[in-house]
Image 1 (cartoon, helix red, strand yellow):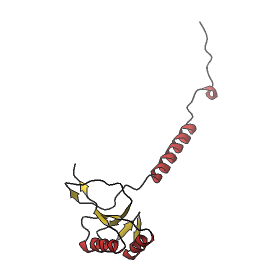
Image 2 (cartoon, helix red, strand yellow):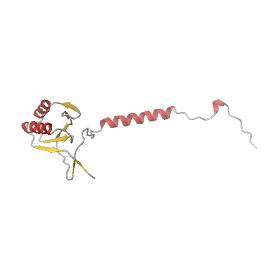
Image 3 (cartoon, rainbow, N blue to C red):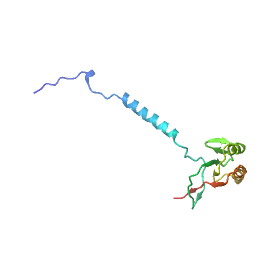
Image 4 (tube, one colour):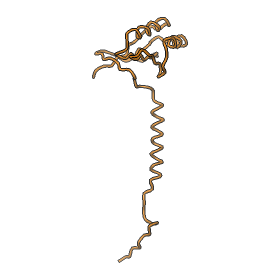
Length: 131
């Protein structure tokens, strides 16, 4: 029979968690960078529902209208005058209005009127569809 030598405390096997923590940190950093590089798909407004709707793939000028009457373009808060300046600097043919369902009608009409003055040919109203 073989005699087994007892291992001292320093010789016992143990799990080193430092490489595991380093690896998880690298994965979390990668996921965080990936999340910030993705295009903005979150809508901060609550769109109304519609039975019909379709998607288009053209160059669009997207404006969000909130229920308190403020406007946002690409996540930045802008005024109606700034929207007109943006449309003057780079003319768009199509504008998508993403208005909150509780937004007052006058803010949507003012936005559409400003777009028409600056050469926007098509104004699309964004809606949600029920599934």
